[in-house]
Length: 145
Image (cartoon, rainbow, N blue to C red):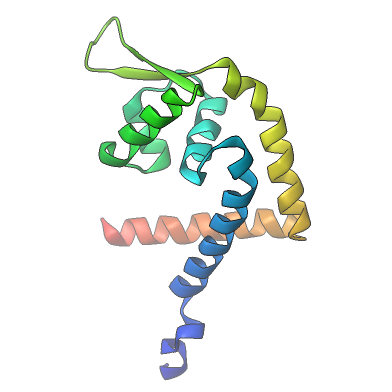
């Protein structure tokens, strides 16, 4: 049991280190587009479903309004998207992609794909890791409720 309590054997630390490496990878490949990693995640969500409300987008990205709002404002200023108040409920704000985001989707996705392939992460390994991480997330969420 004591062996598990060493730093190198901590699952949380391995995930933390892996996350840091991914952040570096994405920071480098997104820099030419003037995007941060969280902004890229927002684009991914909007590429899947354009017109999400700020609340829906925050839930998908697991970001609170204090983090999400300034990020979306910067993306709006950068010409990536626009915000629009709902005509049915003035409290709801929806986020829509602008042409820049649509035009750059292909090149950004291509660059991300090339980088992941360059890491020599095979498709089967990728899929297995995703399944395992989702199971661990579910277990942690049920424990932390």
